[in-house]
Amino acid sequence: MRLFLLAALFLGSSVLSIRPTAQVPVLDLSTRGLVAAAARYVSEYQQQLTWVLADEDYSQEVRAQVPEQRGAPRSRSMTSEMFFMFAPFEHQWMAIRDVGEVDGVALPDRRDLRASLETMPATHVAAAFKRNNARFNIGRVTRNFNEPTLALVVLDSDHRDRFKFERKSVAKSGDATLATIDFVEKSSPTLIRDLRYRSVYSKGSFMVEAGTGRVRRAVLRVQIDALKVELTTDYAPDPRLEMWVPSVFRERYEQGQETRVSDNRRDAATFPDSRRDYEHIQCEARYSNYRRFEVLSRIK
Image (tube, rainbow, N blue to C red; front, side):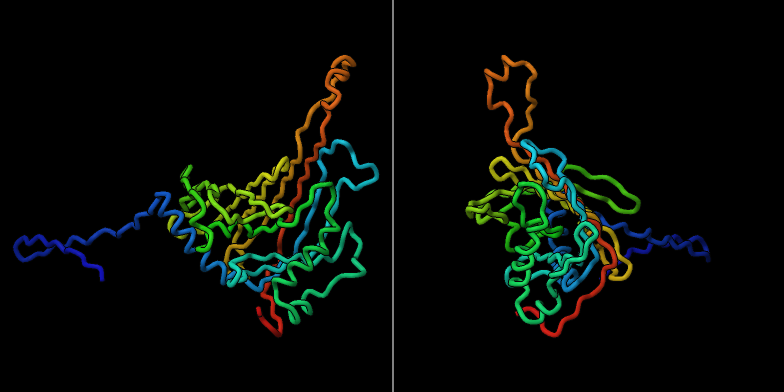
């Protein structure tokens, strides 16, 4: 219950009432307060962005490659349906890509996502589609965790205590106050493991609205041996679902170290291994036409 103090000044028979000014909510801009608000938002978001479909336009480009894979494609475009959900028992986000066209050509062996979800647990479907879709990746970098909602797991109650958070900046954007929070994973088991199941420690940042905790942008970075990965997701409001959804997802992969080969023969003879393996891949996904997804059966 709110209590207001009314002050009155009596002058003869007249009464002057002084009304209290509207109270402006005080935003908690501390690191602890911002993380707590973002965690509450993600907890609700896990229920909202579940059993949702979107259309995806996805592009890949090999920006640099040493040595060059002769005859291999340097770019690729795909159109797909992307299925989003959160598996509560595993505390895991899933984004299942159902590829329809590759470089403008319809897939003759396209799998039936709806039928698969009606007959198998969603986690099994996600693994099967992930293996199947890996054949469309270009370049030498092996990648299978390119999911736009992956960074949100950092704020989940099962994982949050393993991370250190630090507020870096605060700025106004229209009526909203936006804060940037950096995070670093400090202990295992880690969110990501390499192909040999070794721990891979994550770091990155969130841009969140103070007060609501709404995530506007999420950046996740990892390094696996000589491979550097950066995944960035921008969120935007969707009028149909009446919520914020992934709008653009960008991936950057950089393997090895780029070096220039000297034209000087003496240098080349002295440093015969100066030209190392190097690869730089950029990918971008754009999402539209969000809608609810219904199947006969639900998560098992």
